[in-house]
Image 1 (cartoon, helix red, strand yellow):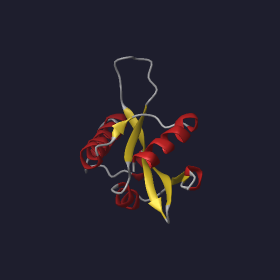
Image 2: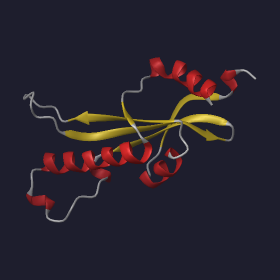
Image 3: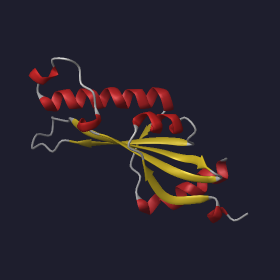
Image 4: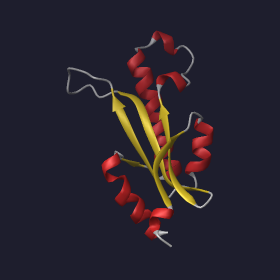
Length: 128
């Protein structure tokens, strides 16, 4: 069997966190990529969103990459948080989410780009 028949370089973006978490359990590898608020100050590092990738999820004998984008729009915030600095509230929510990914899936912080996707797929397929 030729490896090119076994994988896809397409990324499927899911809108449901629940659905992403369900399939991420079956992934060969989970990666998250935090996006920071732009700031003129080097000491202010606040996370505004997190892109998550579940790599090597099988769908009908084809391995795919699933993506979920965690943003302030799809986050739940604690009560009375409207009185706090919005950047702090969002950052706190994103850090809790990252902690959950690291503990539940042993996710790694990294970046997934089109340039390195094909070799990554071959390695994952050969490993399994």
